[in-house]
Image (cartoon, rainbow, N blue to C red):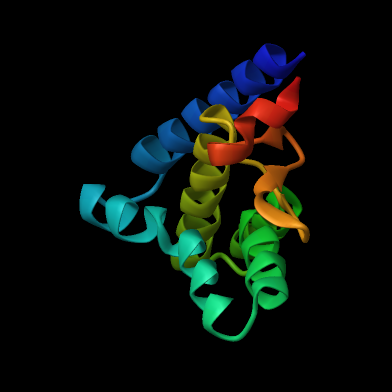
Length: 123
């Protein structure tokens, strides 16, 4: 099942990238500049692990990204739409490489299974 989910994420990633480069008037610079912005949520680790986990999950939740995309369409704002598309691509990329939404017990524990040093727990 995990391989099917990764394939689905890869398809959505390709769709987001294709839309970005065929329908929006922004270049590689904007795409690369925004692509890792959702990971900056980890900076909240300076407050505490729970805040960092909540922020990470919010910034990687595809429902949030879909809402940003819809808002961009509704208000006809290409900058908002671009952010939603790039953040969606980032979230899909993370899931293709095995990173999912985080549980509060450990950054290594995701909804897709264990990652990193804890990967052996996937049994």
